[in-house]
Image (cartoon, rainbow, N blue to C red; front, top):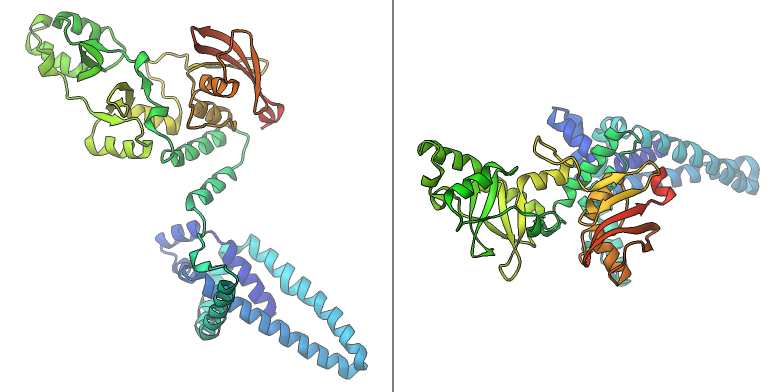
Length: 410
């Protein structure tokens, strides 16, 4: 019984969820707090439980052997060994550990007060044993004091992957949770709107022309440039422009565009999304201009772009319904060349590589093919088939992707 207690306790404390315990402690569960304190020094806890378990197992075996030798002579050693092996294996190991594995939350709360006392009583012995173990390992070149216990992010990613389910809600939750963790690994460059797709206004145009462009645009913030598109001199907000128009009774020619425009905020393309999200919150802004190491204008990034990395595409009344990806009836995917691999992986739960040398599906094909393909050519990469459907000059604009059977079944 004592052996079962120690074995079950060890498994329970090893398997229990610290996150659930912390949540329970915040809700006023005092026993959960006791368990967490024990887990703070897991090495001491395991040492005490193993010491107790070995003591009772050896004592039980010694007593059984002594008793059976008295009853059966020398043959009693064989009988004691066979009997104790069965008893310890079934009732002191498999049974209690199986129970503890499935009831770790309940069991740890129940045994925590006893374990805390045992740890205190046995701590001098366990500390001495730990010191001997560390010294022995150090002699063999294994210094466990320098061992990294592993990334909590990797652990969290593993837990997210275990959130299984075929329904769309579960898949969406899993994708969203993964995306939150990915914010610290993705640069602004990978999600920004490229300069060739940015609607910009030449500040040298007349005020009336600029007002007309803004009122006919689907965007509320538009960059202003002078002479060259790399020279961003301001950001024109539609709301500020409407206020200025109201002050001059709707006479567009009297609006001073420079006074209405806001100062541009430039950020490097290597800024990671997590930092940029924090910067948006601190500055209370929703719009930033992205520049490269030479100061050249590369594109824009908005708060909505980052939020879409977490929750998926956000369509408002002005957004176009086509987002660059279409799934055909035969299961193949037709994607525009500028669709990012991250979006495809998240949408369809693929594992296409997202390398630092490329971020779009066109970039992947160019990188792997090592040539600019012609329309009609097909390639096989990572078990996916890529058919080139359209090409504009040297830019791949449309690709059909045939999905492996295992990806479809997933």
